[in-house]
Each structure stands twice: as structure tokens, then as C-alpha cells.
Length: 294
Image (tube, rainbow, N blue to C red; front, side, top):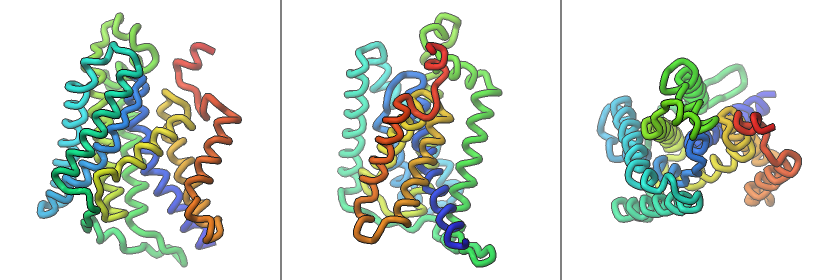
């Protein structure tokens, strides 16, 4: 029983990271119908900034890092995506890849290609004993931060003027603009929020791995993209649940597969994703726009 509880906590902790990654990608897709593959580079830069500010008080370093990533996300939207907003969707997708590769190579120029190590919040590695169960404090913090961010996002989207405008834009962007919603402002706020989510993922991922590479956010962005598809494109609750689904499946396979098959864990994970999409191609949840068409 204790082992099962530990596996469950591990699964929820990994799922929380994937859910936040998927939510950051899903926010932008819901409004602009754009898969922002540069989201992974936002995560990587957040980790590098924490390393650079290693001598500062940790809460201050985290606040400065979150602000910097939010500004980077908004600047990326203003410089790279806004000029091609009305272009063909393929053009925006190519722009997304271009920004991603540009930032990756910029990180290589500054910090090099080799993995770097940084001890961040190692004090949270101390396990918490609950009966016979040893649960790392870091995993509990990851779950707590994820729940806090999800609750804050729900309150923002349902209780604030900006949030209501973002929800309207996600349902029908063109009609919302005709009704007075300012497109530039809504999209800028969405990118800023995706930057905040990327910064949170960066802090939690760095504290778990202690390793930095220019492409460290690539896998998280890829998993976030897959999670949005599994959950349902355009559905934010679906993106979150899709992230938890991928995380839980990943950890369960890691513990259940024989040792000689564990190197192929990701292949089994994506095989299960394919089976889910074969049964339900539209994803687990339908977006509001898709429900209206039905």
C-alpha cells in the first residue's frame, strides 16, 4: 500500500508539470489557433535565469524570473507573431519554429551546449514521513503550486474583465473583436500568462532535475502539445486533464514495465495516446467552439 501511494504521488507530481506546460500552450492556441513551440524555450530561459541569480534570496529570484519570462513572452508576441497574425496558419507555425530555434541557439552562444548543474531548492528533497510512506517535500510543493496556479487562473478567467474577454476571444475571436474586445491587449495578456506558467514549470523542473540544457524545455513543450490534443484542442480543462493523464501513464509504465523494456517507456506512452485518439479523435473534452458547431 505504501508503495502504491508513493507511485500515485509521483504520478500526480509529473502530471502537474505536464498540465502546466499544456495549459501554457493551450492558452495561446485557444485564442490564436497557434501552437507556440517557443514555449519550451521560455521554460529553458527561466531555469537559466534562476542559475544566474543563484546568489539572490530565492523568493526574490523567482519573482524576478517570472517577470522576465512574462516580458519575454509578450515581446515575442509583439515582435514575431503580431506582424504575421493575419497570414496563413502555416506561416505562423513556421514563425513559431523559427523563434524556438533562434532562442535555442542564443542560449548555446551564452551558456554553451553542455549540460550545466545547479542545486536549486535542494532542501525540499527531504522526505516527509506519513506512516510508512516517504513522500518528497518537493513533490508536495509541485502539487501545491499547480493547484494554486490553476485556482488563480480559473478566478482570473471567470471574475476579471480581462479573463472574460479572453474567454470570448477563445470562443469566437472575430466576433469578439466586432463587439469591442481589443485583440492586441487580449493576446498580450494571454502570452504574459503563458510566460508565467512557463516560469513556474522552469522552477519546479529545475528543482527536480538540477540540470540545464538549451533544449531542456523541448520535451515539456512536446508533451504539453500532445496533452492539448489528448484533452481536446481549444479546451483548457482538457489540456490540464490531458497533462495529468500523460504524466500518470508515464509514471505507471515506469513502475510496471520490466527493466529491459523501460528504455522504451515513451514509445508505450505515445502508443496509448494513439489508442485514445483512435477511440476519441476530438480529444477527451470538446472546446466551446466545437460544442457550438455540434
